[in-house]
Length: 157
Image (cartoon, rainbow, N blue to C red):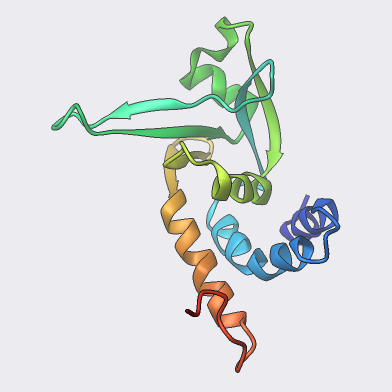
């Protein structure tokens, strides 16, 4: 599924409250910009049987108390078995998801610091980390640029 179709699907599935579809359409350029830097239109996300994404806690080797929560995204189901023991755990499933939907979910996943996308070119695997804070900043920039001139900001005192 191409990125335009993915974005349209996000807009179509947004709550019909008069605001959310417009908001999704407004942040679409940010989602597309990041998705274009990734190598695949869909990735597999590890989930438990309740469809909650599997979090991995990473520690800083030089400073072990510093940790971050990440989610891994794999380009193919075969890549999961080579880099994660998901096949050994019957409580873990791999669900395919469009890349823009993964990025959209990342915006709201409070405990998650980033998603690590594994991209393979047949011989090498490259990890691309998308930090939630960076994505949120990009979305804020896009929203600021698209705000109509002369509109009173919602946070004005």
